[in-house]
Length: 285
Image (cartoon, rainbow, N blue to C red):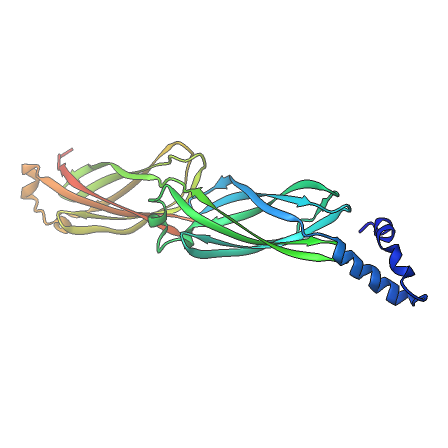
């Protein structure tokens, strides 16, 4: 605090009686300062998104602080609580200090991350939404050494939700057909509609032919789906004729095989499920 201005304002206090000790005078000055310093006005002016992944939204909240006092004061920091779709998700604090000039308005900002995986029971459910409603409650710590205020402020709004990747199966085919068995190749697809890359922990796939599970929990690791791009993930394996209920004699008939593909795409530990079924002609090579 500018003590010269404070002394000019409170010097008449020293004339109220006999000379006092230093500690008494100091107390008088501090008490006078507390009476003179007015509470600043604080508001959260808005929010903007600075980054996204499938599991988080990074945001920056803008704050406006109006100092009505004839002396400079300081924003020392703030505590905040975040609720999304009516559920409290996160708490945090900022110790970023801001000096507020006398009789002026200043701005500042602070970072808040939305943990989307905690909004609903699964990430898949969250990504079906276009936006989520949020409420940010903050308490700002403003003042001087002599007087401090804890000023509450609330900001409500909607935050955009990243779009889920469009999962699919491009092809199911038999690459080799013989009495020794069948060679199969399935191509999984993932279309990323977002403006950010999606790191994939793994694709975990299971395949059924003619009602028989022929592949269980096959993993394909280390895939990165580029922004606004389509990734293809091939899965190749072999099965015996008996595994899908076929005989050697049935090969000559080139039967149609029913298939079902079920897989999870895991990103940042969270699964996104997909399944598709169809039929494919068994053609000898």
